[in-house]
Length: 201
Image (cartoon, rainbow, N blue to C red; front, side):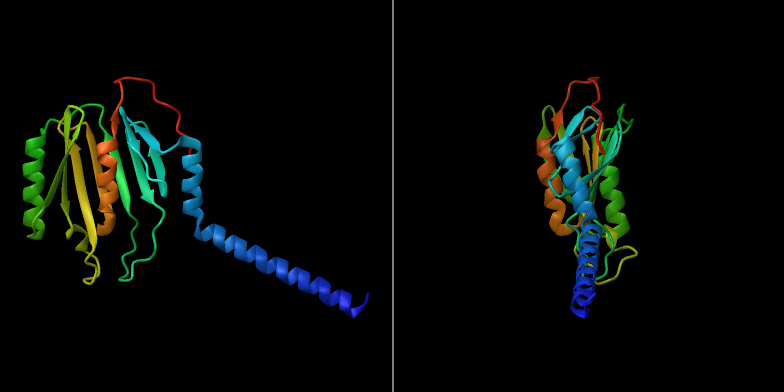
């Protein structure tokens, strides 16, 4: 075999190895976004949680915990410049029975607890969901505990309906709280007791 042929074979092997390594690195780096695309392709753009159909943004991956809980994770995550390691996450819970504590008591207790713990003002938002109210209490300082002191743009939001059946919990970057707020008014209440669909993971 001529030297030129040997060099060509070696070059082909090297180029192929580099291409495979590059493809493997890209697949690993984007594995969650690929998983999110796969989930949406199989399930559409919403997830059933209890008797509620909850919209799921395109770049968010559902980690189902059926039938009454689901975790939705933002796959657009990039490392925070100040070292905050978390991902934006929304946990959706639809209780089978309403807790004993009503909405007003929950609001008063949660607001007082956050204010006492952090000494900061709690942001409040409210929507109508059919015949229900959904109230969110947000504190943009909650995640500062145990985090680098330079991290100033993370938030925790707790939401619940007036029936106390539906609850949503957000932890993540403050600029993405708007994603949660865009989901809530588009949640649909389904007929109680209707058959739960199979969720493809």
